[in-house]
Image 1 (spheres, rainbow, N blue to C red):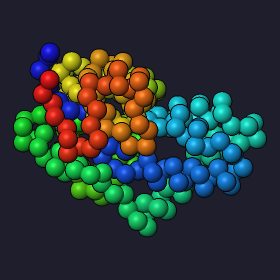
Image 2: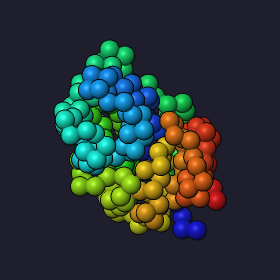
Image 3: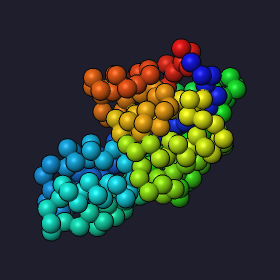
Image 4: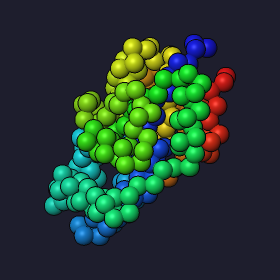
Amino acid sequence: MEKIKAVLFDMDGVLLDTESVCKITWQRAAQEYGIKNIEEIFIKCVGCNRHDTELILKDCFPQNVNPTEFRNRTSELFYVVEAEQGLALKPFVVECLTKLKNEGYRIALASSTRAENVHRQLKAAGIFDFFETLTTGDMVEHSKPAPDIYLKAAASLNLPPENCVAIEDSPNGVRAAVAAGIKCIMVPDLIQPDEEMKAKSWKIFSNLGEVLLDA
């Protein structure tokens, strides 16, 4: 096994409890637009950037619902929740980041969220300074499950993929990391691992407090 030198974190659902907020905002927007099967559609989009999300919505939505308008509405609703309540850290985030840093691992982010939101949310959560580089959804044309974002994140550290490990919560994220040649630890959030995820994941932990990088 190649030596692991860096840990590449997803943000939504791994570091910040944003997926549950997103799900609520999608449900509220779906009620406004009269969309019935939004939970099924939402699961398909978890881990994708805005561009790829809108392509999925275009295929799933009736012709009278504009995917861009729908996403804009979910964003409006999300910002209201974020402004009123803030975004909670997932359990053991600070402990995990501190431990990895103290053990000499380089730490980077590979998130499908736009850079503007990533910067704001990480700073508000008090964990921005842990990350050496930030690779975001607006820096690649196709986000997860395509490997682009993880290849770019590894390159931002001048490391080959085999010297990195990813930490992900979603199937699309796991698929992206594995497609990039990066070992992936799955810490499930809204979606529990099925047989595909069990086969693709290097390790599966219930929370970040359990994360170990030994083989």
